[in-house]
Length: 456
Image 1: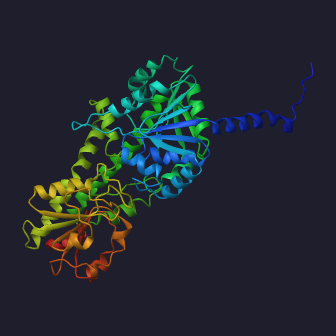
Image 2: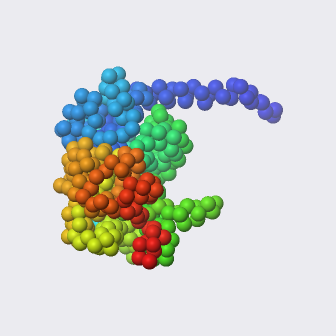
Image 3: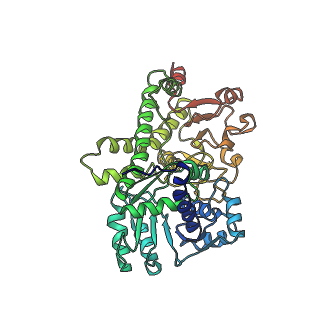
């Protein structure tokens, strides 16, 4: 029997029509995003800007009121303009309670308890809150970073209360955010995305949804693998930073500037050493490795050691400051901490090492003021409204966050009570020459060359 030859032109038609239909179908869906924080709000606004109807939910009544008035309760590049567009076009509303929707996205915190175990109560509560509204055919997506098996052990028991058959009448997946504060919108669009479904159809439906704006590749897997992948990514970075912090401590004792050494080492094509600092903060890297330690405490030896190393850096930094003050004959001096956010150019203080450095300094008997240009409302007992107020009586300035505003400071204009105050830069963010020309004694965390000169 003679085979019929396929026409290359016509063969493309069956694919083009369904794809267009899928896009139109996605645009008709209504989303309900539970959690309007640093991840939930940008995600909700991104979908709204893409043409979908989005309703956001948050327990914080003040935040909801601000959002509906097109005002922000968090800081993120481009968010103000995108929020205004979403509200003005009628694509985005917010309230404190969920609504009936086609898709639910849960983006609430997943912090750790004081004993470093995972606190998944926010996940459970958020899932339970949507149960009365979920209808047949709905899709529920968890974006929060969580320990492996959270979808299976925490979310699914709540979703079974809908009475719908999971994987047939109700679809569930995990698609963890993979963005960095300050570049969220850029990375929401361009980064690859991992989607893990409780079954293949759940994963496919989630992929179709995110194709509304994601230009990166969307990789499909199961929910537990997706959970592990995100935690692995952040744990890799935490272990690498711990390695850098150990190198910084070593360098201070052998007359080496670790920043210079790391730069040279990273010229090797297969080496990528991260940078040291006063600790690790944020809602992910400082938290997620503990998920793996809790999951397998007898196996996660390196992970636990790295976490303890990074958690110990605030106290190490405080001792370093105390040592410098003592070397110049100042006992129990006053320190001005520059930066409260966990990273540069954001207003996020979650798990910030700067706050732990302050606690350590105070525990060693030092008086502390602090200042952060990105944290508008006073959120810390030591916080001042201006940098001038923070440094006025300081013996030592301690840079803990590499904001651009600090990099652009004119050291000659900063007056302290000391004729030659001390600057300790823990982020390698400042120009030493400028500060030394302004009569500052300038030091960096991990700079053994300067340390050797000081004690020679």
